[in-house]
Image (cartoon, rainbow, N blue to C red; front, side, top):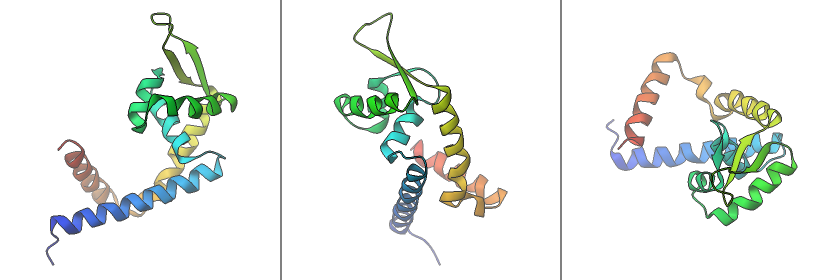
Length: 135
């Protein structure tokens, strides 16, 4: 059976739905929202700004303020003024935030179902996802 590109898009939508459900499950386990996990992920790879987090989350910077304020209150994120531009807030994970993200990232493959794939399937999936994201 030949799979056309329309069917591939339907398959991707189903996978996206599964991924969103997994994110909700993991978020609940950590008393977070999926958007808060997205914000933590945006900060994961080092110090960043509110604007970059907003860009990663595809939302307005004014929406990110409340999300970050709640993460700061939970001691998962540190926020400080930039020395170069006092209007900019620099964000980074606290050790508690880093530990939580390490746990989430370790749990995600199982919850999404990636652990059901063998090494050849994982390599193929990686190549396909890379090709699609670089299109």
